[in-house]
Length: 461
Picture (cartoon, rainbow, N blue to C red):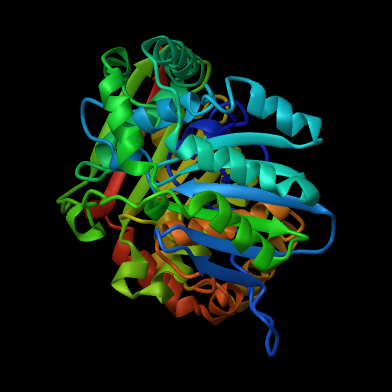
């Protein structure tokens, strides 16, 4: 299946690798957090809930006679445990093997016949299936997804085919890619007690030993209406969408869900720097620097999250950011740099920086220079000019992303998966504008410390 693009802050960085593999972490750096409520008007997003617990969110956009249908299951690799890692991703593949009503290949043919498209995404905290099709054919999505929520045909033969595809995918995109392997080792070290420790695609030993009975249990446990969210965006009538949901999903019974770990139980106190050095056949060295940061939504410390978002933008947020300016262009120490910070996440996350040394530059020298740039955020507040430029860039990026109907649906669904109401991020730009130089300096001092630091280095052999 098509995997979610990982939105890191560089146009040229990791074009062959991190864009895919980091999508296995949940990371919506590029998610659009903008106001969705028009003052004095009916909310743009309508929310419904069926008696079986299925949530239905409708975002009206009348720019084209197109609809985006998404069904989100609140299960991903963060729900897995040792022995079955990768099972969510394997099941995603199996969901396209068909039911009695829609045999293998028929769903794709039906959607293509209407000029539409379909695909799926597996991430750490959700599995998403979607179709993009003409508004007049929206009922097809409800027919298909309600059927395979309960009637998926799971066989040993199909499992073996899916596993073969997934293992080949893992070999191609991760095992044969030294930078991707470095990232996986970084995550395993940084997220010691976290559900984010293992890759969404799974460990190979677990894939080699995955049993059909485990997949059947996973499907029956998590693919239930009270663990699902439907999001529809486009030129639609919300009441019509709700009626379709009732018609096709209302008869599917809810089932009890297993307990989930909480953010408070998924982090282990760090008492010093963690580091790993990998020596593999590779064309270029590679460096990852990361600092553990809390889940600010649950901790009710949102101002810190916005300040860290500004800090990330200051370091790597654009071609004029500090690392690009100082280390790539001025000093020619790095060939490229990038970063990742998830402002909203289900569990504690990492504030990450990535770099490839320039020719004749050592990892040690580049690492020292990057840490110096991080330290400058602690000792020198951002100037008003720099902060204003960063805020303007962030705001512009958000406005630009509004052109995507799929992204509009995705922002709503992702927030719902995290347990946030759709309007919870409507003040994103306002909150960004409110960040002060002192606040950026404060979070840098608090979180960019050795006790939260993890470093991974790739040294070619």
